[in-house]
Length: 89
Image (cartoon, rainbow, N blue to C red; front, side):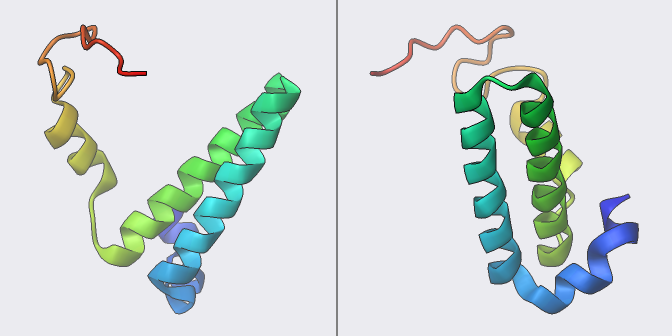
């Protein structure tokens, strides 16, 4: 869907420009989380996902396939689901 809607426009911006937009959206998400606004968090999560998908399209990576290969229904570090890794502080 993101490829169909945005690929032509986003590919002219290039990977670095799109990565910069993704960074901006992550910062907006940080603000929404800090404000504890469910509506804003929902919107910003969607924006982050859209820009991430756009970046994957520009660099020629199948984002869904990459996630499935890496996570394969379990944590890639401990191979458990749910994850049993001990968080390092």
